[in-house]
Amino acid sequence: MAKPSAKPANQQSRVTIKSQGSAYFQHHKLMAVDSLKRLLAAPASSLMTWLVLAIALSLPMTLYVSLENVKQLSRNWDQTSQISVYLKKGVLDRFADDMTQDIASWPEVSSAVYIAPDQALKEFSASTGLSDVIFGLGDNPLPGVISVIPRLANQDETTLEQLQLKLEQQRHVDSVQLDLLWVKRLYQFMELGQRLVWALAALLGLAVLLIIGNTIRLSIESRRDEIRVVKLVGGTDAFVRRPFLYTGLWFGLGGGIIAWLLLSMGLFWLSGPVEQLISLYGSDFTLKGLGFVDSFLLILDGVVLGWLGAWLAVSRHLSSIEP
Image (cartoon, rainbow, N blue to C red; front, side):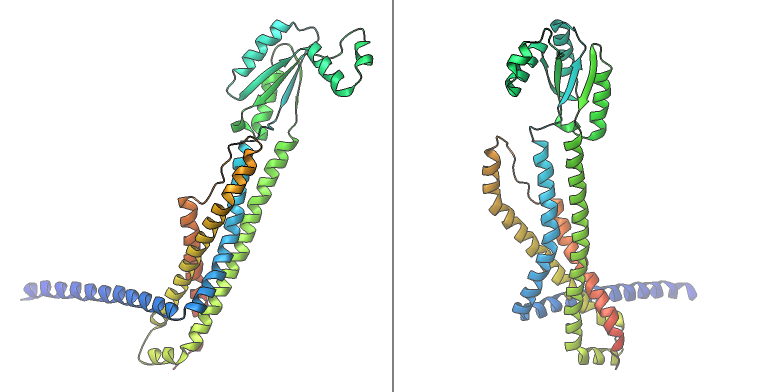
């Protein structure tokens, strides 16, 4: 008789678990809808909170997008690191031309141009205005020079130093001069910009938590009597906390969406004048906006910060309310 009764008991257990799970998710759904209705019932105050959150979320993302556009613009600069390869005295032009063609075929080199000693002397005399003194010399003191322009994809300090070493090992080369100052300045600027993005994001993320926390605290105070009644009839802290967590989530979601809209409209408004300005310098630069991943992360950050701010506020103030 024990075996036949086991199956109905297991079925009853499964039905109980299923009904409990259904009631749990149904309550989550009810609390999510109810908290959203409460926000929409006070549109003015909710909109002000959403706008403040949107501004706080959009500022670090604006700096991030600006930095990404500077990186993109730097890839299109014509002012790349020029490497001057000075040849030994007396190298024939045909050997220098062959070397120039060989260097230009390297994958890390964009172009290479040979400047003969006579041409270099003429350019030097024209730029200095000392033509009488220079042409009075018995011998041309200037060597032949190969001007090497690295590819933009290789514009980092380590790769350029490796290219310099490779050029120094070539036959007929006396010395190689590479100016890494502007490259170092560029990468230091990028590093500074990235740290500013993280610092500003951390500060404004803290501001979002404080804003959400203060808003939820006021909501808790306005519903203090309701919370006492729920606890009096046996409601747990998790049960009481749930609507406030959804309120914080809706605040974060709305703030993230509005921040995305503000950034998108601002970039669209600036794209025309920026592209016209850049075109005057002969560049095909296009202002980069928010991609799908950046947009998703912006809205997700708003949701996470909203939920976290609400959880911190509820955890702090809920324990002080007892029936």
